[in-house]
Length: 87
Image (cartoon, rainbow, N blue to C red; front, side):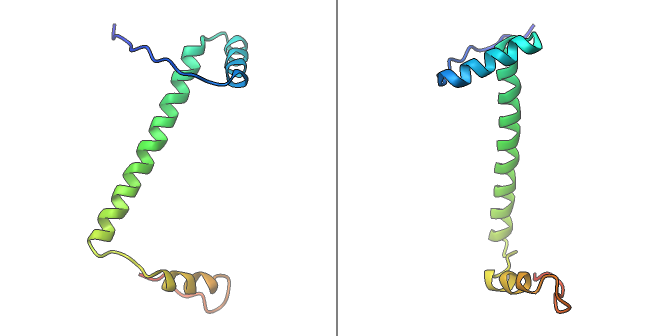
């Protein structure tokens, strides 16, 4: 059985009451809900960091489009002159 680390988190009383209410309603411990929330948060943050790193790598490789070109293209959206996206 894998060991677990214990973390201590301070939250405002409103959040503590909300997690307690959820725990009672679902018959699951607070720690289970908090771990689910932490897993979702970490996954979302990891995804975002990866996308930023990919974007920075593309920028470093010269794969970019000038803001003015994108803005001009967006201003034509929905018109007969929309055209292809820049880049």
